[in-house]
Image (cartoon, rainbow, N blue to C red; front, side, top):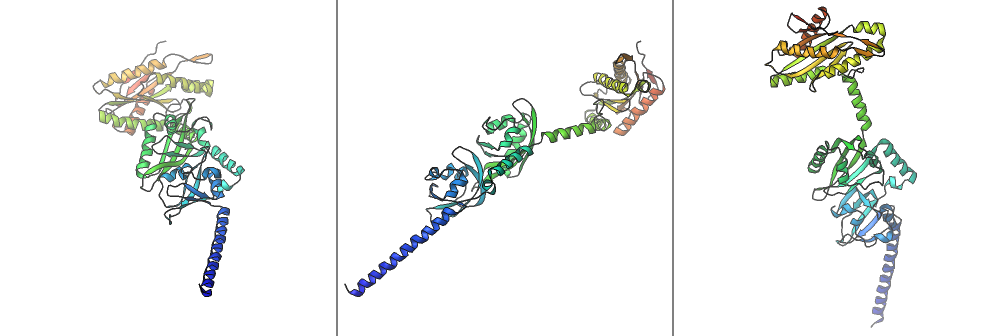
Length: 439
């Protein structure tokens, strides 16, 4: 072998050694950068087992390094079983060895080598914050009465954040959330509505937004509002629902209280004029369809002003409350008694048979009212007797519209009042009918 050839071989060997050393140095630099990266980095083989990871990956997943090595990535990120091989940045569920759950942001890079995929886990500012900040977040969710949930569709697996336990009457740790537990907690009358809303969301991808009642273990009933949507896999199939739930019990109670105040007399609790007109309008619609009668009876108490002026408003108020109770007793369950104000009451009676004589029907109704009001009222250590004047108007005999029926009953009542105590008048009838109280 010539000296020239030997020199050439030595030169090639020296160059190769240089590049190998340089490559090792470059690799060491890259490895150091990966080790120091705040992003979690995991290398996955074709079976999606973890072949390598940096320290940040274990920290962000809350899993010790020795447990990550060689394990299936789906053990820690269960949604990766159904997610595509390439994934843009999105939030997903992570589970550690204690089965605690939290959300992480991930990106699954393309598998360019066809042997190794790269999974990035991006730092979450909330998880990077201090424990004190995390506790503040939990407390804010608790006091705001709002929590997060997710459900693996078609399974019993359900996750609640801590705030949700209290909304369903439990303390964190008392129970393990499951879809069965959730369904059993929903008020029986609302379950079908909730399931239908979930199914619509699963089938169409529309936002899930439902208000429903929850029955606590102690039997008390509370209200929540639940919103959420689905997560779909590569084939477009929904496999998970995620969302938030908020306690709206106080809101509902406030709304109901305001609604009652708007539609009911604050003294007697009876419906007021607004509620009467709404109910009468519906009654007239039913009567037209069913070809039945509706009777409206206006009641004005006689001698009330004298009692109220002589003995004070407290006595007058108690008298009105007792009269309201007596009038309730005179009604069927389908009828209504309302207070228009002062000492004026109205009875609404529907479903009356059209074949009965109108005069007989009115007489029967008024006699029953007089009988209920006849006994003396005991207020404190005194007894009072009170009379009434009644005006009766009947649909369709006296009027066919709401306003005209009310007007006819009102005119009939004043005509009866002008004629004396304990009398009634039928709308359109010039005759005043008297009722004599037993002494």
